[in-house]
Amino acid sequence: GKCVDEWWATSLKDINGMCSSAKNKSSLALANDIVNTEPEIRVSVTKTVSGSGKEVEVLEIDSSGDEKPAAMDTNNDSGASDHDEHDNDESVELTKTTAKEAIPTSKKAFRENPFYVIPSVLNSQDVLHPDAHKRICGVFKGELVYKRSDVSKALRAKKWLYEGRKVKENEIPTPAKQINARKKPTSQGQGFKALESYVTETTLPSKYSEAGDGNAMENLYGIWQTAPWSPPHVGPSDPIPTNEFKNVELALLNPGLVHLDLPRISSLARKICIPYAPCMLGFEGRRGNRAPSIRGIVVHSHNVELLREAHIEWESHAVEAEVEARQKENLKRWKRLVVGIMTKDRLDKEYG
Image (cartoon, rainbow, N blue to C red; front, top):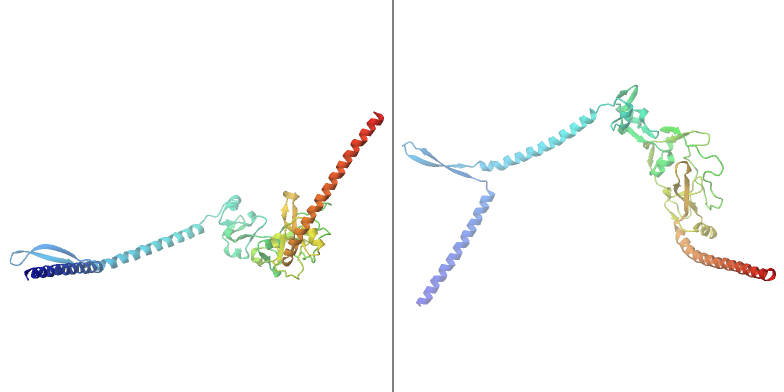
């Protein structure tokens, strides 16, 4: 009975020890949470003398820690506002610097200046925006000084098509600028001429050919006179639109048309009566000796597979015909060589 009592007492002591340790841990965790969540409180001890003349220790509690986070937020807000004000000051200063940029004092300086320009230093294709007179910056030797940002390139109406834009119909009679047109070759044998073998259905009228034989001026149009443009779609039953030279430029290829660059494809298309037009890839040469580069044909998209299959068959027959013709030519040469040798041998026997 005594052993059982001792065991029971030991067990109760162990259980009580475990419970007390768990309570201590939970209380410590709770205290840590309170310390972390609540503001910091500072306690200081000072010695003072009471009215009876005895020295007494007094506890002073400083609860100003709860105001620190607000002070920190105020400092952060003030730092952010200071940063924004600094950026604003920089942008304002940059604007003022640009506005206070000194106007050049020579034409050479105007050519290289990124802010100001005068009409006399503009290139042949440079034009001023119609609203540029609202932003005049000054006068230089009788010429008005404009901003460089009001200068843009002016192009021919045909050139704007390559940029994905088209001159508006009402703007065609009023070009932004006129320059001397480049002279066209007049002697025989020069220049591009359409071949009679071109199998095209229609010819696109040349609306944008400003430079004629008698006129020496060329019309240029500004970007404000144009609108976004893309080549119109060509359906299966629509004719292939071509330019004045009866070909199609690859840079202006219409949706619904396909460029085929295969050997002897034009002859095959002509034999099987498929409408096509030669394709111009661009210009080759240097300076005044530039000539158009014509390679391949343009056909409707629904005729592409038919032409490819026919081209494979036609190429195989063409290769066989070339091999046969080459063999015949070789046999003819061998025959000529053998006949010459036999003739020489006979003459040597008779007259040697």
